[in-house]
Length: 589
Image (cartoon, rainbow, N blue to C red; front, side, top):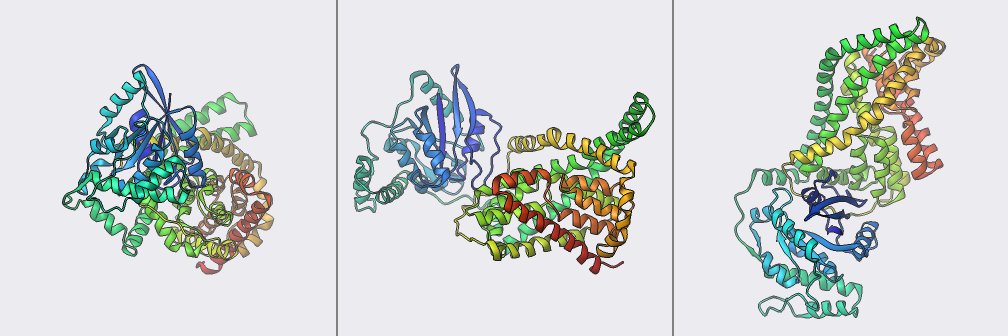
């Protein structure tokens, strides 16, 4: 049979799915995480139940695509059970959706999720009384601690054996209470909505009034427990100014941790890999007859394995870990608010933090994630910034290697990237701005679950072995062919021009043009050259702020069309060349 998880944003549906099924799903606190229906399997009493996780919605009656997806799943004939995940700390607001689901007439199960956090805040809900009022089972539940899991599994086992029952036929929520502050209109309006005699506006009003009344009748309040450390931190982080400053400091520290981890991992991996590298080179030389191809492969294959494993792999691993921590602690949603505060500089909403953050992992899915933005103009702005400014994890790893190898000036590179991000964003804002007002709901700060962190890292890091490593191996051999064939010697004629304009040799300039294939392949060229710290700083900056790689080009063409792609490519070249010229003029010789 099929059951669907339905609930408002940030109530923990995806985590409930993982707790019930063990499905490897990416669980995030920021809005619009589950744009697709994530599926898991639950085996109970020798039978299999398919669980679908729907997007977070406030009401099934809205016209957004998230609501359409949830409504379609609820009304699907194959759906035999609706599991309504409710945030116990916001019962009144969440019950408005529960009443809509109740009116669907299908078997309904209500989970009072985050019940542990509600009790900590002094909120105590009587699930038995709420069950009598709604006419369906209600369980106190915590996806984080596992509270209520045995009771829910027992109910599901019974239902799979005997069949689930819809809410009590003909029953209405028992809201008549003379002590309640209600004039009774909400109940009449709700009854009219059940008969189809009220307008959608009246129905929404009725649901919210009725939900507030029900929540009041089943909830008691006590003084909350002493303020927890996380609560104090949450109040500080949510402060408009101090919170913004602390989040920016955390962002800088994360970047420092990334660079330091890559440098530390490189030393250890290189030391361990040197014997393997020498063995591979010897084996290729022994297997192939002496000549050009033997020389190319004996150098290119070991380098093509060493560089990704020593440089790219640590960067992708650390980016995956940092992103998982930001999501599971609730900090990523707060970065969305911070970005919304400064979004006026870019003409975008805080939702842009989702694709921008994903871009630090891989920019191709990040461009797809721009679909969450409310307008075409905002999509173009963020796609352009992703294509030109944001470095993916693999690029960060390669850039970190070049910085360490040539002792480049990291502070200059970071400041240049930030300046280009702000300036380019401001220019795009003036042309494409379509600002819209959005309401953000901040999840609580949480101590992340190790199991969930490991699941996220495993899913995101898998792309290194299936995509990045094979491509880097092939391209490393290609770069070695270019170097050993003497092709780079033919660009020496441009040396005077590139040194005069950008302050870098012509061979380093070719690395900038390699970014059209893959940006993280360009530093491979630099690692085979002799550069001064000044030359390396300029070359790295031009590579980091240049053309989108081939996969991003393809996905941008598909998502936004050829005209938008042409504009992005032109801006990429203009930005890269401008950065080279400006740094050549400003940096001391």
